[in-house]
Amino acid sequence: MRISKEPEVRKREIADTAMRIFAEKGYEATSMKDIAKAVNVVPGLCYNYFKSKYELYEYATNLYAEECIKPLVEILQNNEETLEIYLEKLSNEFIKNVGKEKYHDFFHKEGNQLFHKQLEIIMNDKLQPYIETFIVKLNQKGILQADDPTTISKFIVYGQSPIINDDSLTSEEKVDKVISIIKLLLK
Image (cartoon, rainbow, N blue to C red; front, side):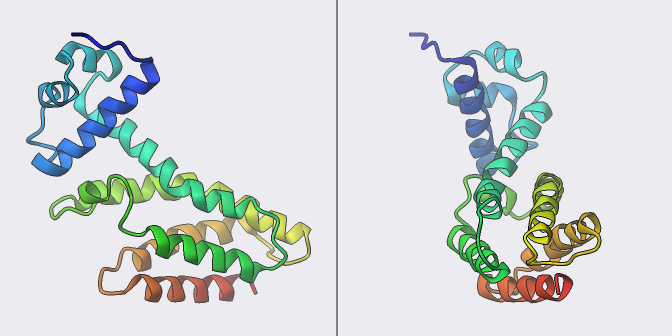
């Protein structure tokens, strides 16, 4: 029996299923036919939404990146009184969610380092404008006196990645290192 769903709901269902199967079987070993079977649709329906497996992967990765940064963006858009409050909230959010992300198993699977790097770049590209706006906002409130919010935001966002992705550190150590660098940059 065919179940009709709204296009965005179906598209999301296909993407979520694909990422689950990619985590189980590996990206290369997964076909669009495998994904369609798991969603319980004909392969042609998957191709109605995505021209290729890679386009499906890109859609899912972008969606995932937006979901991952959403709580951080919400914190950055709050109106807190001090930089310390923002940093504490961001730290707590990171520690609370690290490892619990929807597609974590795929992106952190052995052999998927290239996929993880792609995700990192996409997330950083999406987050950087929010960090820049945040710095400008704190400048306007007199909390900061950052001369070049664009450069500082880029350095913060792209510079923190090697620390955040260092598996030899605990989540708390990662946060401590990143926050200490941010404080130095925003003095």
